[in-house]
Image (cartoon, rainbow, N blue to C red; front, side):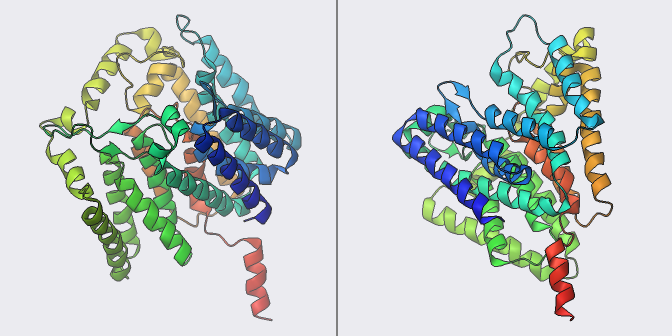
Amino acid sequence: MSKRILLLSFMCTALLLVGLVLNIQLILLAVTGLLCALIFFLNIKDATYLLFYISPFSYILMYQQYNLYILPVVVFVLMALIKRKSTVGVLFAPLLMVYCMAFSDSSNSIKLGQLISPILLLLIWFVCQVTEKEDYPKLVSYFTLGFVGSACIGFFKNHIPLLQKILVTDSLYINGMDLSGKITRYSGISYDPNFFALVDSILIAILLLQKRKMNFFRATVLLFLTVVGFFTFSKSYVLLLVIIFTAFALKNNRHPLRTLVTVGGILGCLTLIDYFSGIQILALIQARFTAADNVNDLTTGRADLWLEYLNYIFGNMRCLFFGSGFNALSLRKAVHNTYIDSVYRFGMVGTVMWGFYLWYCKKEVTWKNKKKTSSDLPAVVLLLGVFFLSAFHFQQLWCCIFLAMICPYLNGEEPNEKIERHCSHL
């Protein structure tokens, strides 16, 4: 990791903290301007690293009611177009944006915040173009570092006035239990605990299943991410964690002690937190599963919502084929299922177009990296995780998709590692 980029990243984080603590949004605006300038003047690789680091902070890049994350993203796209030769893949951007605009909901005005979502998904292609295999571990490191930093800030949310204005507090609800809003679900500086848990799960899968030897720093980050995820009280997080650690156990079937030590360390930390905080995290998560009387309760009302949306989609041919519009309002509540939400907003035609675009991005990554060296599990975690979320408007979704695409190619030797290995035999 470049010391210069790390220094610039930490400087931007420090300025963000100053703006948040002093409750001065003009500082947040200034940080956004600084990010735009850095991305403009840095070489395209360093600009990509900086963009991945700052993405976990995207939701707090605010000025008044406007989210400013789109500004450094647009600067990055322009620099990517200027500094790299365009290919046929770049045609996806205007084609998909024309489709979004042509079949938008005419009864609902298009706001800047709604335009951000499709633009961010189109960013995946440009990142695929400007990165190579040797960049992948660095991108994971910068994003993980930014995510851990944002997670740490999230613990002090109640003591930072500006964060309280920007972020909504989500109280824990368990069917049949009177918690009276006493326990809040942790979400870092994401706007929803479940989205925090999704990113958390993907990073856990990446860090846990890397072939490289586990070092102290990676083990500490892994332990932090795993434990902090339980504070979201997310049922989907627990399910994804079971899948991740089952895969880890199967991978280490010849060394079961590794699995026992890892799981034991996590449970030990959670037990200590339970004892000293009095929150009883594990008991409350268990209650979220056992207190459900039916499938709808178990899915926190999602099952009825899915059925409502499916009835609407199949009862409306325009919606079925072309969608209600990327800017369409929810029927009653968000559908909490990205696949149904995609058909609702883009129709079958638009969903196929977006699917083909993502497949094309994946092929670009595959073409650059002929041999897989790691697991596809982070992609499985992403595909399962968005089944319970309406992730189209989630600003870190593009990062999650890109990380899922590159994770099978993370463990190859980097050029400098090859040089060191060969020199050792001389």
